[in-house]
Image (cartoon, rainbow, N blue to C red; front, side, top):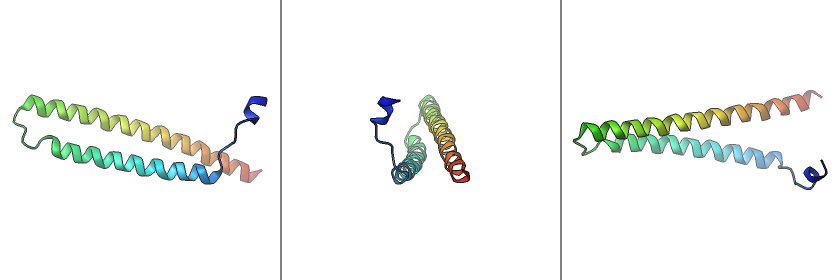
Length: 88
């Protein structure tokens, strides 16, 4: 516990800023994936290339969804702690 006291804890303002930045970043990533999906099939004639690109983009999109879910769970824990502190 002594070593933990040496670290400065984040303020609520810093946490709020991280939350806001994370949401913007996730939205930007989702938009970029959508744009890549639109551009991935332009000028491509090979069905195999189209299928490969679709699979890669599906994988990336799924990964982003899992990251967003994890982030939402972490944020829910933070909100619950804030609510619990206010009750006390």
